[in-house]
Length: 443
Figure 1 (tube, rainbow, N blue to C red):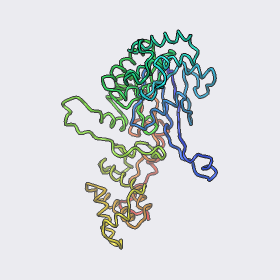
Figure 2 (cartoon, one colour; figure 1 turned 90 degrees about the vertical axis):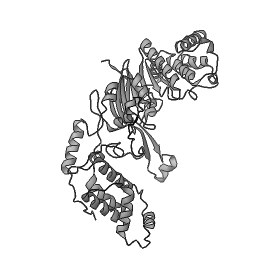
Figure 3 (tube, rainbow, N blue to C red; figure 1 turned 120 degrees about the vertical axis):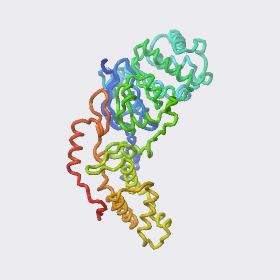
Figure 4 (spheres, rainbow, N blue to C red; figure 1 turned 90 degrees about the horizontal axis):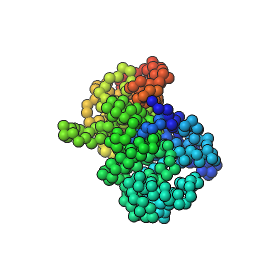
């Protein structure tokens, strides 16, 4: 196993709202948008680490922060033993020569006023490499290496296709012979046939120059093709990381399983396969869920001690409870729909909301508890309604933040092996948990 070239430890990048001078003078509380929230991993010399996840999960912000294109909120990044966030002056320039970025958009990442040659030679000029003639000669060589022609050196970006522009961006990244390149969605804007050409180019250049890649993408088939290891991100956190084939053949985290389940398959034996999509919306990074960040959408939510409901039933009750806690149920509108302006027939209110919220029958004990919560809601007591469900249906997933243990293929899920402190916290939580009787009101 090779040594790590890049080590990321508990990296955080928050964006703050209500943080102007006026907000501070008026005492407004700052709100943090947790774009990257405590990420740790290593990138080994000569390997490609793929980073995958839904749009908005923090992949690009992670890359820009570890490259110090954005200043971090917390954590550290070490590059070949040097702390990146402590570098300045000539040390920072030396880091910039060894680490480069290939950006996602081939149209906005190239200056339309500069020729291909000027774009490629700009890093050489900034770092004082060679004479003007030598830099131009270097640009012509790089254009040939990335599959373009040296004759195209004086053309402008608008004269190239999207795939050709990405090749120019890659040539620019290669210009000063870096060791590490961040590839941020380098083929997402390209046609499938062009994607294959660019991916092959990346692989060839890696073999020839012994490059190390951090490859960011949302296309899982592309990641599987090019990566040695894969890190799966969700809501600013890494929830699973491991060797590529293990991730794809034996995923451990429910989110990873759901992502892989959504991938189209060419096998005719699976043409009638029903794809189970991930339920619900991605929570806001302004107010991420407590405990496990994926619990609000997880199909394998852990039930409290003494409860053994079908997962669909437990999931449905949990989602209904979340709607109550978030104030998403309009009680006034529901009473209007019931047709009882005097609000006297609580059972009609219960039946109406129960029918809308659940499409299956609930076991007797759960029917009693849910109905009790809805009666409290009918009385306008949302806090009691939520507490009635919370006391009986609390999950350890909402109380305990899973960690990412050491090892080749860890996952941040309580269903799998966890660090010792997380295991201890779960044992203590379960020991303290007391399940209330069905239908018991907290009032």
